[in-house]
Length: 310
Ligand SMILES: [Zn+2]
Image (cartoon, rainbow, N blue to C red; front, side, top):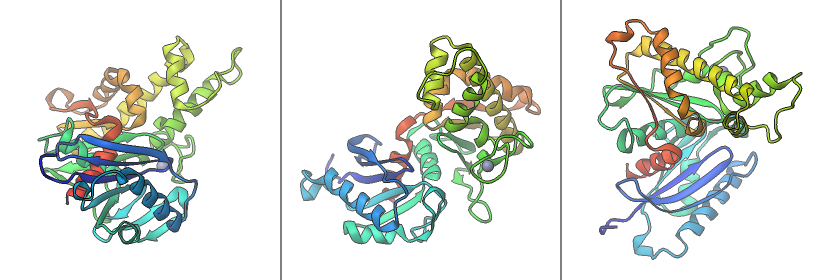
Protein backbone atom coordinates (compact mmCIF):
# COMPACT_ATOMS: atom_id res chain seq x y z
CA UNK A 1 0.00 0.00 0.00
CA UNK A 2 1.94 2.92 -1.37
CA UNK A 3 5.17 1.75 0.24
CA UNK A 4 3.93 2.10 3.82
CA UNK A 5 3.20 -0.90 6.00
CA UNK A 6 -0.45 -1.33 6.97
CA UNK A 7 -1.63 -0.80 10.53
CA UNK A 8 -2.35 -3.82 12.71
CA UNK A 9 -5.77 -3.75 14.35
CA UNK A 10 -7.32 -6.08 16.91
CA UNK A 11 -10.85 -5.59 18.20
CA UNK A 12 -11.04 -7.85 21.23
CA UNK A 13 -14.76 -7.90 21.93
CA UNK A 14 -16.83 -9.62 24.57
CA UNK A 15 -18.20 -12.17 22.11
CA UNK A 16 -16.25 -11.64 18.86
CA UNK A 17 -12.64 -10.93 18.06
CA UNK A 18 -11.60 -9.25 14.80
CA UNK A 19 -8.02 -8.92 13.60
CA UNK A 20 -7.18 -6.91 10.52
CA UNK A 21 -4.67 -5.05 8.43
CA UNK A 22 -5.88 -1.51 7.75
CA UNK A 23 -4.38 1.18 5.53
CA UNK A 24 -4.00 4.85 6.46
CA UNK A 25 -7.27 5.71 4.66
CA UNK A 26 -9.22 3.34 6.88
CA UNK A 27 -9.65 0.58 4.34
CA UNK A 28 -9.61 -2.94 5.76
CA UNK A 29 -7.11 -4.85 3.59
CA UNK A 30 -7.65 -8.24 5.15
CA UNK A 31 -9.44 -9.49 8.20
CA UNK A 32 -10.28 -12.49 10.31
CA UNK A 33 -13.25 -12.74 12.62
CA UNK A 34 -13.59 -15.37 15.32
CA UNK A 35 -15.39 -16.07 18.56
CA UNK A 36 -13.87 -14.77 21.77
CA UNK A 37 -13.44 -17.65 24.22
CA UNK A 38 -15.94 -17.57 27.09
CA UNK A 39 -14.52 -15.87 30.19
CA UNK A 40 -10.87 -16.06 29.10
CA UNK A 41 -8.06 -15.75 31.64
CA UNK A 42 -5.39 -13.19 30.63
CA UNK A 43 -3.13 -16.07 29.55
CA UNK A 44 -5.89 -17.58 27.39
CA UNK A 45 -6.62 -14.17 25.92
CA UNK A 46 -2.99 -13.63 24.93
CA UNK A 47 -2.83 -17.08 23.34
CA UNK A 48 -6.15 -16.51 21.50
CA UNK A 49 -5.06 -13.10 20.18
CA UNK A 50 -1.58 -14.36 19.31
CA UNK A 51 -2.93 -17.23 17.23
CA UNK A 52 -5.46 -15.02 15.48
CA UNK A 53 -2.73 -12.55 14.61
CA UNK A 54 -0.42 -15.27 13.28
CA UNK A 55 -3.22 -16.67 11.11
CA UNK A 56 -3.88 -13.17 9.73
CA UNK A 57 -0.30 -12.43 8.71
CA UNK A 58 0.77 -16.01 7.88
CA UNK A 59 1.09 -15.42 4.13
CA UNK A 60 1.98 -11.72 4.26
CA UNK A 61 5.64 -11.11 3.36
CA UNK A 62 7.63 -9.94 6.40
CA UNK A 63 8.34 -6.55 4.80
CA UNK A 64 4.60 -5.83 4.38
CA UNK A 65 3.60 -6.69 7.95
CA UNK A 66 2.59 -4.02 10.45
CA UNK A 67 5.25 -2.82 12.84
CA UNK A 68 2.71 -1.83 15.53
CA UNK A 69 -0.62 -3.17 16.70
CA UNK A 70 -3.62 -1.34 18.16
CA UNK A 71 -5.96 -3.27 20.45
CA UNK A 72 -9.43 -2.40 21.71
CA UNK A 73 -10.78 -4.00 24.88
CA UNK A 74 -14.34 -4.22 26.22
CA UNK A 75 -13.91 -2.29 29.42
CA UNK A 76 -12.23 0.67 31.12
CA UNK A 77 -8.51 0.83 30.33
CA UNK A 78 -5.46 2.87 31.16
CA UNK A 79 -4.33 3.52 27.60
CA UNK A 80 -1.00 5.09 28.59
CA UNK A 81 0.02 2.12 30.73
CA UNK A 82 -1.52 -0.57 28.47
CA UNK A 83 -3.60 -1.90 31.35
CA UNK A 84 -7.16 -3.24 31.22
CA UNK A 85 -8.67 -1.79 34.40
CA UNK A 86 -11.82 -3.90 34.36
CA UNK A 87 -13.42 -6.42 32.04
CA UNK A 88 -16.68 -7.02 33.86
CA UNK A 89 -17.79 -10.18 32.06
CA UNK A 90 -14.39 -11.81 32.51
CA UNK A 91 -13.71 -10.84 36.11
CA UNK A 92 -10.51 -9.01 35.10
CA UNK A 93 -8.94 -6.26 37.15
CA UNK A 94 -5.72 -4.41 36.29
CA UNK A 95 -4.41 -6.78 33.62
CA UNK A 96 -1.30 -5.49 31.73
CA UNK A 97 -2.61 -6.93 28.47
CA UNK A 98 -0.63 -4.48 26.31
CA UNK A 99 2.73 -5.72 27.62
CA UNK A 100 1.66 -9.37 27.62
CA UNK A 101 0.49 -9.27 24.01
CA UNK A 102 3.51 -7.22 22.89
CA UNK A 103 5.76 -9.97 24.24
CA UNK A 104 3.69 -12.66 22.49
CA UNK A 105 3.65 -10.83 19.12
CA UNK A 106 7.11 -9.29 19.30
CA UNK A 107 5.52 -5.95 18.36
CA UNK A 108 4.57 -2.80 20.27
CA UNK A 109 0.89 -2.85 21.26
CA UNK A 110 -1.25 0.16 22.18
CA UNK A 111 -4.65 -0.48 23.70
CA UNK A 112 -7.71 1.48 24.69
CA UNK A 113 -11.31 1.00 25.60
CA UNK A 114 -13.42 0.07 22.55
CA UNK A 115 -15.86 2.97 22.98
CA UNK A 116 -13.06 5.56 22.90
CA UNK A 117 -11.54 3.83 19.89
CA UNK A 118 -14.88 3.87 18.02
CA UNK A 119 -15.17 7.55 18.75
CA UNK A 120 -11.68 8.18 17.33
CA UNK A 121 -12.60 6.23 14.19
CA UNK A 122 -15.74 8.32 13.74
CA UNK A 123 -13.62 11.50 14.08
CA UNK A 124 -11.17 10.38 11.43
CA UNK A 125 -13.22 8.38 8.94
CA UNK A 126 -16.88 8.92 9.77
CA UNK A 127 -19.56 11.59 10.08
CA UNK A 128 -17.70 13.41 12.88
CA UNK A 129 -14.71 14.31 10.69
CA UNK A 130 -13.90 17.96 11.34
CA UNK A 131 -16.51 18.28 14.11
CA UNK A 132 -15.08 19.75 17.32
CA UNK A 133 -17.96 19.17 19.75
CA UNK A 134 -19.86 15.93 19.57
CA UNK A 135 -21.04 12.95 21.55
CA UNK A 136 -20.63 9.36 20.42
CA UNK A 137 -23.29 6.95 21.62
CA UNK A 138 -22.90 3.23 21.07
CA UNK A 139 -25.75 0.74 21.26
CA UNK A 140 -24.83 -2.93 21.33
CA UNK A 141 -24.81 -5.51 24.14
CA UNK A 142 -24.25 -2.50 26.39
CA UNK A 143 -24.64 1.23 25.84
CA UNK A 144 -21.44 3.30 25.88
CA UNK A 145 -20.58 6.87 25.14
CA UNK A 146 -17.72 9.28 24.63
CA UNK A 147 -17.59 13.07 24.68
CA UNK A 148 -15.42 15.15 22.35
CA UNK A 149 -14.92 18.78 23.39
CA UNK A 150 -12.89 21.17 21.27
CA UNK A 151 -11.63 18.30 19.13
CA UNK A 152 -10.36 16.25 22.10
CA UNK A 153 -11.78 13.23 23.89
CA UNK A 154 -12.97 14.44 27.29
CA UNK A 155 -11.90 11.78 29.80
CA UNK A 156 -13.25 13.42 32.96
CA UNK A 157 -11.53 13.58 36.35
CA UNK A 158 -11.26 9.80 36.73
CA UNK A 159 -11.50 8.75 33.09
CA UNK A 160 -15.19 7.95 33.51
CA UNK A 161 -16.87 10.69 31.46
CA UNK A 162 -19.40 9.81 28.79
CA UNK A 163 -21.18 6.95 30.53
CA UNK A 164 -24.45 7.92 28.93
CA UNK A 165 -25.66 4.32 29.20
CA UNK A 166 -26.00 4.63 32.95
CA UNK A 167 -28.11 7.74 33.24
CA UNK A 168 -31.24 6.58 35.03
CA UNK A 169 -34.32 7.21 32.89
CA UNK A 170 -36.76 5.12 34.88
CA UNK A 171 -36.62 5.03 38.69
CA UNK A 172 -37.10 1.43 39.81
CA UNK A 173 -36.97 0.30 36.20
CA UNK A 174 -35.41 -2.91 34.88
CA UNK A 175 -32.10 -3.98 36.46
CA UNK A 176 -28.92 -2.91 34.69
CA UNK A 177 -25.60 -4.79 34.42
CA UNK A 178 -24.04 -1.98 36.52
CA UNK A 179 -26.17 -2.88 39.55
CA UNK A 180 -28.61 0.06 39.31
CA UNK A 181 -32.11 0.04 37.84
CA UNK A 182 -33.71 1.85 34.94
CA UNK A 183 -30.47 2.95 33.22
CA UNK A 184 -30.61 3.83 29.51
CA UNK A 185 -28.64 0.61 28.91
CA UNK A 186 -31.35 -1.44 30.63
CA UNK A 187 -33.90 0.07 28.21
CA UNK A 188 -32.24 0.21 24.77
CA UNK A 189 -29.31 -2.26 24.63
CA UNK A 190 -29.67 -5.38 22.47
CA UNK A 191 -30.59 -7.63 25.43
CA UNK A 192 -32.99 -4.93 26.73
CA UNK A 193 -34.81 -4.81 23.39
CA UNK A 194 -35.17 -8.61 23.42
CA UNK A 195 -36.47 -8.47 27.00
CA UNK A 196 -38.99 -5.69 26.23
CA UNK A 197 -40.33 -7.70 23.32
CA UNK A 198 -40.63 -10.89 25.40
CA UNK A 199 -42.57 -8.85 28.01
CA UNK A 200 -44.81 -7.36 25.33
CA UNK A 201 -45.61 -10.86 24.08
CA UNK A 202 -46.11 -12.43 27.53
CA UNK A 203 -49.69 -13.55 28.00
CA UNK A 204 -50.54 -12.86 24.37
CA UNK A 205 -52.20 -15.39 22.08
CA UNK A 206 -49.10 -15.81 19.91
CA UNK A 207 -45.71 -16.36 21.52
CA UNK A 208 -42.68 -14.43 20.24
CA UNK A 209 -40.77 -16.23 17.49
CA UNK A 210 -37.80 -18.36 18.57
CA UNK A 211 -34.29 -16.92 18.78
CA UNK A 212 -35.09 -14.22 21.30
CA UNK A 213 -32.41 -11.65 20.53
CA UNK A 214 -32.69 -8.04 19.34
CA UNK A 215 -32.24 -9.08 15.70
CA UNK A 216 -35.32 -11.26 16.09
CA UNK A 217 -37.31 -8.22 17.23
CA UNK A 218 -36.20 -6.22 14.18
CA UNK A 219 -37.12 -9.13 11.90
CA UNK A 220 -40.52 -9.44 13.58
CA UNK A 221 -41.18 -5.70 13.14
CA UNK A 222 -40.24 -5.94 9.49
CA UNK A 223 -42.64 -8.88 9.09
CA UNK A 224 -45.49 -6.72 10.41
CA UNK A 225 -45.56 -7.76 14.10
CA UNK A 226 -47.15 -4.71 15.76
CA UNK A 227 -45.87 -5.65 19.23
CA UNK A 228 -42.29 -5.60 17.92
CA UNK A 229 -42.89 -2.26 16.21
CA UNK A 230 -44.35 -0.81 19.43
CA UNK A 231 -41.31 -1.99 21.41
CA UNK A 232 -38.95 -0.36 18.91
CA UNK A 233 -40.99 2.87 18.97
CA UNK A 234 -40.56 2.84 22.76
CA UNK A 235 -36.83 2.24 22.39
CA UNK A 236 -36.59 5.20 20.01
CA UNK A 237 -38.46 7.42 22.51
CA UNK A 238 -36.14 6.41 25.37
CA UNK A 239 -33.11 7.03 23.22
CA UNK A 240 -34.49 10.43 22.25
CA UNK A 241 -34.95 11.33 25.92
CA UNK A 242 -31.30 10.45 26.53
CA UNK A 243 -30.20 12.55 23.55
CA UNK A 244 -32.14 15.49 24.99
CA UNK A 245 -30.29 15.15 28.32
CA UNK A 246 -26.98 15.09 26.47
CA UNK A 247 -27.91 18.10 24.32
CA UNK A 248 -29.12 20.18 27.27
CA UNK A 249 -25.93 19.41 29.18
CA UNK A 250 -23.26 19.72 26.48
CA UNK A 251 -24.80 21.56 23.52
CA UNK A 252 -22.92 19.40 21.00
CA UNK A 253 -22.96 20.06 17.28
CA UNK A 254 -23.49 16.38 16.57
CA UNK A 255 -24.65 13.23 18.32
CA UNK A 256 -23.52 10.09 16.51
CA UNK A 257 -25.44 6.87 17.09
CA UNK A 258 -23.33 3.77 16.44
CA UNK A 259 -23.01 0.13 17.49
CA UNK A 260 -24.56 -3.08 16.23
CA UNK A 261 -28.10 -2.28 17.43
CA UNK A 262 -28.03 1.04 15.57
CA UNK A 263 -27.23 -0.76 12.32
CA UNK A 264 -30.81 -2.09 12.57
CA UNK A 265 -32.46 0.79 14.45
CA UNK A 266 -31.49 3.53 11.96
CA UNK A 267 -34.94 3.68 10.30
CA UNK A 268 -36.13 5.01 13.71
CA UNK A 269 -33.75 8.01 13.56
CA UNK A 270 -36.58 10.47 12.78
CA UNK A 271 -38.53 9.14 15.79
CA UNK A 272 -35.44 9.45 18.00
CA UNK A 273 -34.94 13.01 16.78
CA UNK A 274 -38.60 13.93 17.45
CA UNK A 275 -38.45 12.57 20.99
CA UNK A 276 -35.21 14.47 21.60
CA UNK A 277 -36.46 17.80 20.21
CA UNK A 278 -39.62 17.67 22.34
CA UNK A 279 -37.48 17.67 25.50
CA UNK A 280 -34.66 19.99 24.49
CA UNK A 281 -34.34 23.53 25.75
CA UNK A 282 -34.22 26.06 22.90
CA UNK A 283 -34.37 23.30 20.29
CA UNK A 284 -34.85 25.91 17.54
CA UNK A 285 -31.61 27.65 18.40
CA UNK A 286 -29.42 24.60 18.59
CA UNK A 287 -27.29 23.41 15.72
CA UNK A 288 -27.57 19.78 16.79
CA UNK A 289 -27.33 17.11 14.12
CA UNK A 290 -28.25 13.54 14.96
CA UNK A 291 -26.65 10.98 12.68
CA UNK A 292 -26.01 7.31 12.30
CA UNK A 293 -22.36 6.24 12.46
CA UNK A 294 -20.45 6.57 9.21
CA UNK A 295 -18.06 3.75 10.13
CA UNK A 296 -20.72 1.28 11.26
CA UNK A 297 -19.68 -2.23 12.19
CA UNK A 298 -15.99 -1.50 11.59
CA UNK A 299 -15.79 1.37 14.10
CA UNK A 300 -13.81 -0.54 16.74
CA UNK A 301 -11.49 -2.14 14.21
CA UNK A 302 -10.68 1.20 12.57
CA UNK A 303 -10.26 2.72 16.02
CA UNK A 304 -7.77 -0.02 16.87
CA UNK A 305 -5.85 0.82 13.68
CA UNK A 306 -5.71 4.47 14.77
CA UNK A 307 -4.27 3.38 18.13
CA UNK A 308 -1.54 1.55 16.21
CA UNK A 309 -0.87 4.70 14.24
CA UNK A 310 0.01 6.39 17.53
ZN1 LIG B 1 -26.50 0.97 34.49
